View 1 (tube, one colour):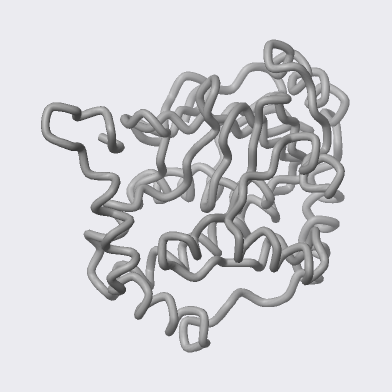
View 2 (spheres, rainbow, N blue to C red):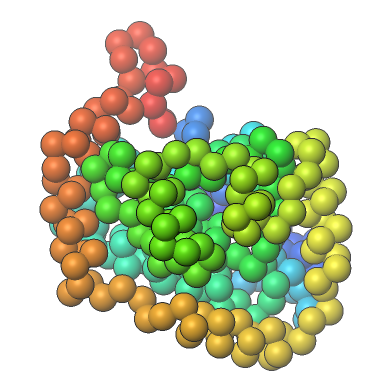
Length: 261
């Protein structure tokens, strides 16, 4: 993969000097992540593009919106086995990002929701604009919320608050909770992220990789497909509440902009 290659039409990859930039750019207004996009992201983090030793990876979305998370209509269309595989892939992608032998930064502008927030928490650092918001609203649409990433940052009472209410967490609160590394004014996000990346270049990939692998091990083993979370997820995706949530995303007559494309 050269400096201008893209892993897929919606996951853009570019290498400039010691910075690998990975951008989520979905063909829908809320930058929602489809199963095929998650596969493209897995391809990138499994085999990152060639870059100088000691490079840094920056993951970003579009200006004004990092990502609204999983594309619910696409999730609803998955078969039962495909849904289980999708859940496993989410865990796998997060672990791959967390174990990359180079520093990783999520650059967050605007909403960073659900699946997108899980992916951002898998990064080592999160630099956000003051208009960034984080949320884990899965329960509000009838799906169980994966909490493995959150529990590495917050106490149980804090996690319960965020996942059962599904409320939006503004940037200043997310910073105070330790979910964000730094908050900057919206127009300064790109330069702030670039400056932070420069401060991290030149690290030994062997030392970084070994250290991060140890941190992942501290977080516990991935959730098993045979466990209660996967079992509940299989039932929840077929629930009337989730189907109603998907239907609310469908465009109304004469208004195609009301749902992800």
